[in-house]
Image (cartoon, rainbow, N blue to C red; front, side, top):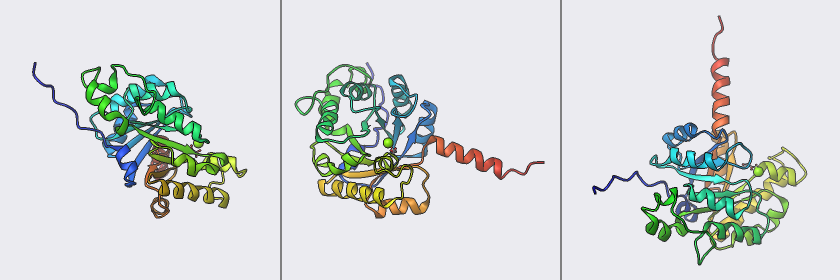
Length: 262
Ligand code: 3PY
Ligand code: MG
């Protein structure tokens, strides 16, 4: 049987996180595979699909994984919670890594890592599935998955910040992702992401990641050139730029506002 040609490999986001290489991703909240295709075509290193605050479910993850496939970007899924089964299912339908919200303790960090890794490093179950080309690439996938699958943990509460040095040191954690909005709520200044308490917490996360030799990142929800430059200057390397709803809303509004109505 002739060998079918293979699609180009996705960006190795796990390696980039461990190398503390600056990468740029974007964010999907509209649960649309078409949006994923557009963002991947635009050249983002990785695409974050939000299943925590949106209608996206496991069928969406599979559809978006298919949309991203072969376009060079990797797909990270922000799961709805730190749950072994949810993490496993996202990886099995083709995500290249997970972003786990609201991690506050070493125990939660260890649970997230274990869910994403095959034994002996973790508890991920084996099967034939989308992630290994329906079993055709089972052996090579199993061999590489523990290093290729990215585990990013969100630090977005006071408790998480207080434990961040221990969380960052958990083997298998590739990056920490700051949640400025939830941090602001947790520090009693809801919505004030620029508040000194939030900024201090943010820099503590960056420093903990640096000391542990992993990346730290943040969703720059409405980014400007200054905000992007400051993020890199502050030591962030895993940078999420805007996202589908921001791009769409801004372009829709600007287009109409700059249209002369007759
Ligand atoms: C937060 O700011 O809480 C987030 O989760 C951003 O993605
Ligand atoms: Mg959050």
